[in-house]
Image 1: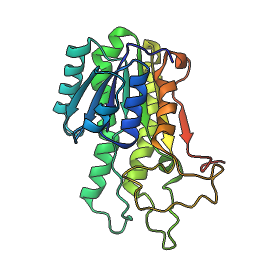
Image 2: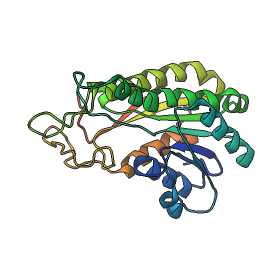
Image 3: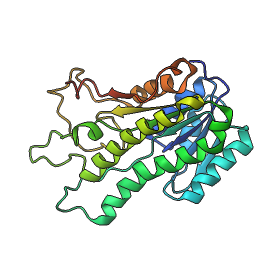
Length: 249
């Protein structure tokens, strides 16, 4: 895909989509920086080679974000790719959601995306006049929340999650317009239901879906690989729905 030797920061790399993204990029010869609150030993075992850096901490904290980017540049010299993947999903409705529930999703999904984008672009990507930013959003940010197959309607992604992912999509487009002149692209992958810890135990109906299966993390990783590559130099501000056709129309 034309990204061998590049350096990629991947948030939420300990499991799920983030793990699949990191492993897929590693197979293409990318040096990966594994960012998570939890240890990434399972991901490290799957990496193609030993070219990685593990940074553990809270992505909602600005000082941790800055320190992570600093460590990345100290070890690898620069940063070419940023994958803002880490996220949380409250399934409480707007009546029962607390302010703390709201802040958790907004800060993890949206604020952290802003913090890492800012820290990677200025000055690193901008000075290099090259960068690939890929934000993992969700079709919940497009359609207001994926409804699960449960008869009582429970299991639907909550309002904070939908709002945060809608914000990620808007931020993606803003950043793309701002940074295009500097050779930096910014795109988003919007998954539908994917087999991860966030969706565990939540049944999803496939009746309205063209592809009759739940997604797997590798489905998302493949989409990220295109946006991360030099082959996507004329593609920016895009939101690619990887949802089995759930959001058709």
